Length: 212
Figure 1: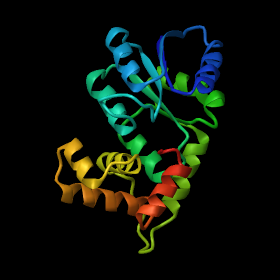
Figure 2: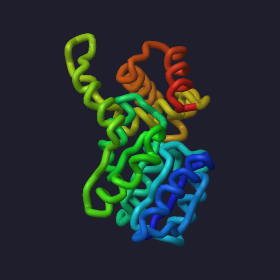
Figure 3: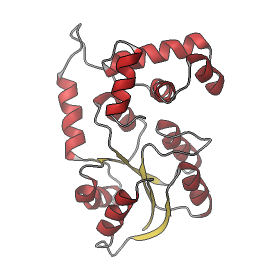
Figure 4: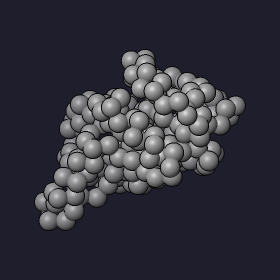
């Protein structure tokens, strides 16, 4: 099977590449260190499996959920394994819900990439143990009204990501072709699901969880 790797952190790329060398039935057919580079690579080299960082800079298609859903729409035959250092349950649930085949935290990726690949190669899905534990614990923790904590929608996560990287609500509305009211509502709902109550807490959350 042909594999494409995409990550803007060289150390992560080296670790994954070294781990894959032990699997004889795999061939790394390309590597990218930016979102735009990844899209160009996929246009010329369609792999069986893409192993990609969740957030990478430099693409008009966006990053995060925007990049993942772009790949799914334009390259539907490619199976996706997403790497991330984010550990927030709402964000992880959003990634799972868009239908990726694999989800690995970067803290465990080198150890779990081989079983993840075998699962995906055989038509299954794989969530690493640490991510699965986070999701399970979140499912057991209700909000202040006793209801299960919901995941962020893809649009809420997109708005939160754009806001914490320096865009105003008006800027985001213009970029995404949505009304200011809609963007404001999505930002407020996304913040609530992340457990933050104001912009300062949202920026702090973003700093600690790798959104910046």
